[in-house]
Structure formats: structure tokens, C-alpha cells
Length: 589
Picture 1 (cartoon, rainbow, N blue to C red):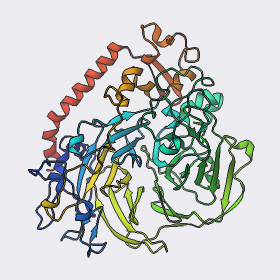
Picture 2: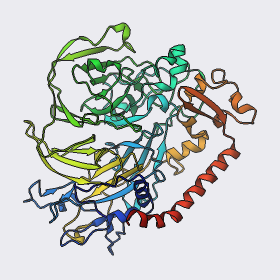
Picture 3: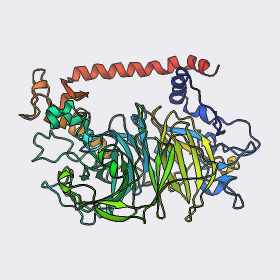
Picture 4: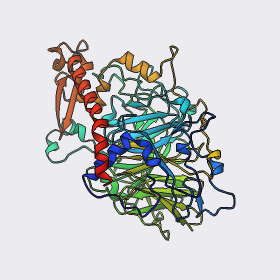
């Protein structure tokens, strides 16, 4: 079933959409079945004596288009236009809630230091899923990792976007002994944005004022070291019972001036990132350029070494709904493209325009004492106008070889636009995906394929362009060994070794601070036990908290209860294949 027609209408039936999800999880290759064609081959289904097997083939970048092809006839990321006038690549799934622990994924990015490693940001549980060498047969044993920092409910709360970048110009000055980020100039950083206003600490930090407002707005982009030996591992194996004396998690910096931040992209130098938010300061403009000049080491608190520039009259708003619809960003020449899902347009900022006009607001109202928090006035800010481009709710953006790709969360389409530095952009086509809520996009640098995430069906998929013939299909790894996970001296992955050593309950469900601020005994942690678990013979490692509408509920998850919960989940998963096949007939009747 190839969704080759951009006019394909997805079923609106509430009943049929969940049934379609079952077909994706159980029969992922069925969506690659190629209708009869007089030309081109679907490499994803090729079986060759030389070693390729079903599900691992791909079409090399140099085989997808002829040198004489016009861009409107063949887009390397989509493949050739078919005789019916539409682009018809295969859509192949590599990650799901069961494979990689995806939970409302909103963004995907390839690690520039290890091509073939894909970071998927999960808004459903404040986590990252890392996929190693997906689509390579020899790497099928590399299991995806589902990582959640013990402090993610603040530093990666309801995340919306991720971007890789450089290192702070002044390096790293740790606040706690032994927390220096080594070789940060070589590793670089990545930054994430959070679509939250810091509601989890509302009652603890705001007291009676919590009844008037739902949050403290103490949120913004977070900086992490681009190092999988430390992310969600460093400072994740002890209870932070004194936040002034112990480091908190593995983050290395954070800005607190941008609640409800919806997108981020790297400036291309240092630790400079563009982002936009819909917080209280957005009345001064939503787009912000931030240059973090010094990190504070792992788990520090000093978040002042940064220059922030907020662009006036660039105001955007959140798209209403129960699920986050991020608005991602992409940089091309001097232009910054920003997806605006609430308004249904792509905005364009000329980053070389505008002048500094003093502080955004009085310094005593800043959340931290930054080096600068400056208002930029008079910048050129417009809506992208391209003949033929029709958008309802643009979300994901990525640029590849002077082509801008845009995902529309409402329609599931991916649109392609040819960019021109003079602003004379041209619409060149689109493809229809089966996504229920398509979000972030990425184009990997080795194979030139588009990867996308679907927040509705919790999946990671790749667009597989067709090949002129089956003989052109390949199955070798385009990444070599650089995409493999790091291992320790015993041959275990660093993540598996960490889980075995820390032996905690899934990193406190991503928020140890809950216990410190709200749970009984959280602020008087003694002998590695909390009162909530002591009566049942448990320790702080067994504690779990739920946070609903500003109120916390603490309980102890004993080994017996945990085993019972795991057994129930396995039983539920076993039912899925048995019950799904009869349902397929209902969907396709």
C-alpha cells in the first residue's frame, strides 16, 4: 500500500484510524507493497543472492535520478515522478512504542558526530530514544535505547524539538567537584526545547498563588553534552536530597526565559541557537536568538552565562489541542524558516535585519541575570509565499541540498520547496504519508533519505525512494561502524551497564525532584530510604510519584508489584497479533 498520491484522503472514522495503527505495528512491510508499475523498483522489498534480505534494501542516492532530470520530475529524497504524475516512494517503519519506546515522538535528528545514530524526542514521557544504524542487517542486534534523565520533568519537560550544535566559547566551569564536561569543544552539544510552563513545580514554588496560575513560567531551552556516555547517565544513580550541594542530572545549562518553546535550530557557530516560544515574554516577540557562552558542568544551577536577543513583532501562538504540535525551524543563508502550525503558514525571518533597542524588560523581571536580554526591533518578518504550496498545520522542517521539506501535521503530507537565496522559491511536489500526526523531519547525510516521526501512532519511519531497477538496490551499511553504540570493557553497551549498576526504578520516572519537593520524606532523605517505601521494605529506588493538576501522589513499587505489572503488559502485547488480523478486513472493507 503506497501512498503515492498527494490528494489521498485519510479516513476520518474514529474506528478506522486505530485499526490502521494495528496494521502498522504488526505488518510494517505491508505498507511497502508496490502496485504494478512499468518502471522503477522498490528496494525495500528486494531479495538478492548477494546478501540483501527483505526489508533491508535501499536505493543509492546517485541512482535515484538521471543527471538530465528536472527537479520537478525527480526529487532525490522522493525519487522519480511516476507516470501517474505523483511521487511514489515506499514508507518504511523502524521505530514504535514497542521498538524504541516511542511515546508521542515530535522530533528526530541525526547525530553529526556519529552518522547513522538517530535521536528521537518523546513528548509523551520526557525522554529520548536513540536508534543505532537502523535499516542495516548486520546491525539488527543494536537495540534502540529509551533514555530519560532523572530530572527530565524540568530539563526536558513536554519536549518539542532538538538541534545539535557547537560548544560554548568560554568552555565549561563546573559548580560541583568532578562534574567538568571533558572535551566539550570536540563533542559539541545538543539543545532541546520544552512545551511547558513549569507546571510540575507550581504548588511547591508558588504556594497559594498556584490557585491563580497553573505554573511559574520558569522554563526554556536546555543544553546537553553530545555524548551518549553521559546523557541520562551522569548523576542518575543517586537521590538528589540536597539540590544546593548535589548536581541535578546530566544537563549542562538551561535558559529560563522561554516557556512553551516550540522549535529550535543551530545558528551554525558556537552554542548559538534560534528558538521560538509562546510564553509571557512573547508580547515582545516570539523568536529568540540565544548564545550560551559558558556551561556549568553536569547538573549545575548557574544559568546566567548567555546572551539572549528577542525579536519584536514576530509573535506566534500555540496550536490548541490535547497533543503538542511543534513548529520547527530551519536556517538557510540569512533566512530563518519557522513553521507556524496555529496559523497554517511558514514564517521567514531575515536574521541580518533589525537593530538592538535596549532590554526586553526591566532586569529585576528577568528569570536569571543573563549577560544580555535584548530587544531587536525592525527585523524583516514575513510569510513564505510559494505558488502551489498548500498548508494547514505545518510542523516539521528540514533543509537538504537547497530544498526545504515541510511536514503538515493535519494532512500527513511532506512538501518539497526549491530554495533560492534571492527569495524566489519554487514548489516542486509532495508525498502523502500514512502518519496520523506527522511532526519532525530529518535527512540523513549519507543516504539522503527523509526520516519522520508520527506523534499519533508513536512511530519512526523513513522514506525509501524507488530505483530504476532492482539491480541498482544495495543493502550494505552506509555508515560503517560509527553508528554503533558505545561499549564498556566488558562488551556491554554503556546504557545497559548503567541500568545494571544504578538499579533504580526507571530514573524516578524522569523526575527525582518530585520526591525532594513534594513526597513525604523527600527533603529529609535518610539512609537511602523514604518513609513512603520504608514500611514496605523498599528504598528510594522503588519510589514512584504521579503528578496530576499540581498534586503529587507517592507510592512504593515493590519488586512483587513491578513483576505483576510487567506480566500484565506482556499479556496485553501477546493479544495484539491474535486480535489484529480479523480487524484488517474491517478497515479495508
